[in-house]
Image (tube, rainbow, N blue to C red):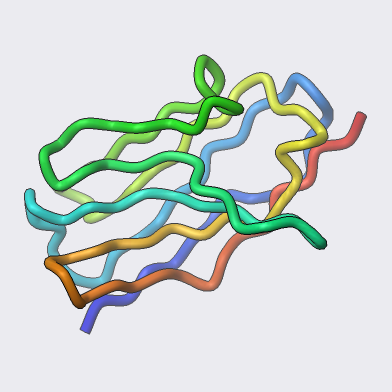
Length: 116
């Protein structure tokens, strides 16, 4: 019922910036919890940034001060602005949307590679 499509990934040098976008097929409602997680080869999946159902944001300690999560209700799009990128940020980034207790969707992911 809900589809998410990530875009904006790419190859950048350390210190560079990228903005990831997540287009949502349906309408984002205020109670939706949504955010981004990432997974690098050989590493455990990591939550990066989240919008809670109450509208507050939560960022992983590793990205605080560098990443900003935002959403545009008019465009049904979730964003992740990534600045001061580091090689350890290299991963596939996925967006997700959670609605209520049961419903949960995620996208196909977009590759972010940061070279030193």
